[in-house]
Amino acid sequence: MRAALICLIAALALGSLCVGPAGLSPGEVWRGLVSGAGVDGLIVRDIRLPRLILSLSVGASLGLAGGAMQGLLRNPLAEPAIFGAPQAAAFGAVLALYSGFSSALSFALPAAAIAGALVSVAAILVVARRGVGLVTLILAGLAVSSLAGAATSLAINLSPNPFAVTEIVFWLMGSFEDRSMRHVALAAPFIIASIAMLFACGAGYRALTLGEETARSLGVDVARLRRLTVVGVALGVGGGVAVSGAIGFVGLVAPHLARPLVGPDPQRILLPSTLIGAALLTAADIGVRLAPSVTEIKVGVVTALIGAPLFLWLILTRRGALAGDA
Image 1: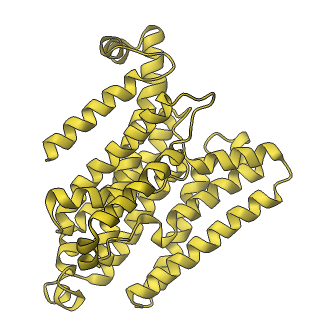
Image 2: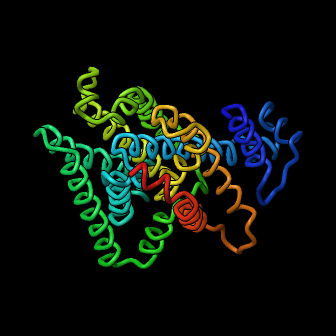
Image 3: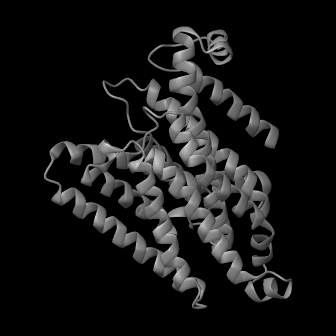
């Protein structure tokens, strides 16, 4: 199963490097990667390779975050946005666009998005330190999410510049267009830290399937597990939103596609969810370049158009399993 997913990702990666306005053969892609010379090298190394790395890493972090959230909450409908990190990261980026800092400083946009995600994490951790239950944490996350969404809408509504409004709306749709290795370098530390933290929590998620009291008797620090998960999800999602904009449904759908392959064990679901998330987002990014349109369709639109019907299909075909998981 893992080998099949890795082969699928490798095929999608090759397709991502070949597909675009200037179509390249696999041989031309290889020469461009190795030598970096000429037009082929410019297209592959400077344009398509950063885009590929970001689609793989952001998709992987979203898929893993979804698997972690469903393992922590023991609910198949949980997703990364439940603690408000994506919405807060989006609001931070919108502030950079609204204020004009994104035009003056090249890194203002991603830096503001990451700062927004970290602020949301800090707010949730303040609540978590009071020893509250999981339901209270979820409610706090929903409050942060609603507040960030409302603030984003207010910024769009009050913007005096129609060009800024257009830029904000397009950014909120999510895209990997015009990304460079600088964006990769900015997001990579946060995504790597997120992946390391969430994989380290896998045994805790498995113990939680027996209930919190039983997990505690097995030596699991449930409060620490919650904090690690919240921080890990926020770092990964915040780093991804910082460079790609808002992208939905990957974190929700990837664990459901992984579950039939490995069973309901939340620890075993983490790795295939990561691989499936990377494959889904890379396939969506290839799709936006193949779609016949004057301007490139935003990848967040594609993931929503595909993810929502797919999730409805999963609900209809696996009603009994979902009811049992819930």
